[in-house]
Length: 258
Image (cartoon, rainbow, N blue to C red; front, side, top):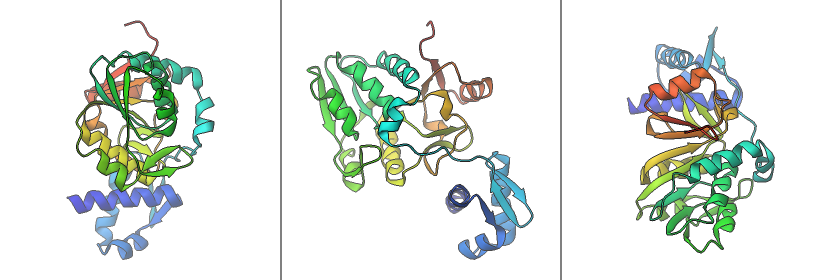
């Protein structure tokens, strides 16, 4: 079963990279039968991620465009500020939290500067800068290799730095959120580090504006079963809101009356 999951993940990655795949090529690549490959493609089609055609399959959904952190800062800025303010209400004195790098989590960081007795671990240089002068925040950084587009640290050093900690909450930003495929991002090392963060926190809170719903980026962070809460805006459609709630995920609409 593990090999099946890994193969289907890799096929999905090829679909995202190339837009289509051929049965014969996949048979040669993975050393399995054409029947097995067709079953893989049927599985992806059932999830709404691919469309079967003669001899292979094509991508059903195009991945979102990657922006650098400076571009992200100005995209949907009012929504991100509202989401960040809502997320800050979940942080209490004494909490130990992880803030993933990103523009929406940076909005949260701005609202944490007035907190007292909070420990924050982050891999984001922009987030560290926001919190560096906050007297009530104990700031930890993962270390690692810098990804310039996102001002985030990643790699084996960053992942190893999480190993001796246990956190109350992870606040995670994503590039895509799909009901079937889960949480995704553009950059493979960041996806690997984010997955490690998910393992080290007792509560997973995803911060995303509604434009990310239905988007699938190249690298999966985690399935939605790992998520406890999603904070978004009122642009979320009924299908996604109901689908997330059926999975037992709390959906908080930022700025709405409690």
